[in-house]
Image 1 (spheres, helix red, strand yellow):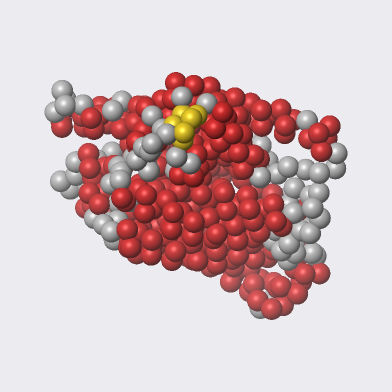
Image 2 (cartoon, rainbow, N blue to C red; image 1 turned 90 degrees about the horizontal axis):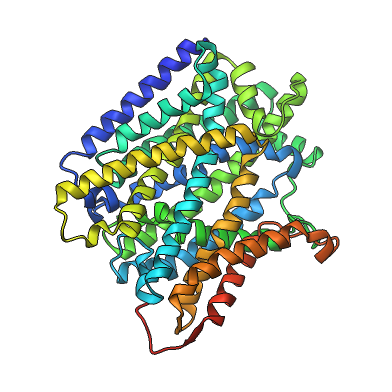
Length: 485
């Protein structure tokens, strides 16, 4: 199918999003933008969060990694499920009890203002890096498949997509996103299922036959039992749990959708239902990866990793499958970027600018500030996507998880210290502890051969980072009567 035809489908999809945004953002205000007026339907949030959690990276990188790692990514997914249970039973009740708009206000109540600002700053750094890495991967595919043939440079493609996202999130924020995420998750899952069954048809086999063929290639191995390996099953499961606790339970983007649900009970139901569906969907992505490698081998297609799925779908499939792939891909793209920009805007306005606490500003002025910050973050996203474009790492999911280990570790340490202890910290020193901890982790990671021999640290770097932060906070703390939390 011609790039022009593919582009017309992208425009049509965007116009559909605009229609949903117009309908949902009527009579919106700052509360609508930040937490959807606490009136979101839990079932809609649960379904939409699948798209937010998976993103274009999962859509492309998880199937692409099967050739090297088999189904071992599922070890991390098992950890995700554990992490969602802990988040639902421990963190959600805390946020609802304190009636938070920004979850980092908890740190202010419990540890102090500097701790609060530090936590919000690490979220802004973490989410900016993670979201722009995800955005880069999908924009690069769209660039290669469509825009290059029009002579459009990569930076302009990125700018156009960010402008699209701004247009439909500018007014409604979370109130709009919970509905657009549902639409986009639907598109992504339809694309996934269609691609699975079409490749099964091309291979002339069924689910059982495909699994047997994958087993012969060692694609279906689920668990790694070598304790020295980075992918040792126990390390992966524990790391997956803590990735979820931090990247969902301590992440404003993910939690603002959960706390937009009216009651705690509904919010917990949302998280539990969503986590079970997510487990099944990730397994289906791994199965798709195995199918793609089997098909690539029969056709002599040399592509691997992040390039495999786009190459097969766009160059070796009928036009209708190419269209479904592109629509599914942008369905995965938008939830990972629109929610991030909205959450970053909310956190910057509430946590760093303190707009909700400003009594000297009227609602109109506050809205103008929020809109300016929203546009500014789109500019920041453009800058970081261009940085990733220059770096051009072959597997973005590895980059994202590595970044999370460094940037979410201090958040894990801060929240864990607040929840698990009753001690009072020397608040002005907290920022130094949270910067020192990732620096120590970098030195550990860079010198693993010297420190540990054949043993390798992988995703558990996040847990080590959080533990170092926790220990540092303990050293600058003293017993206290209690703060809220």
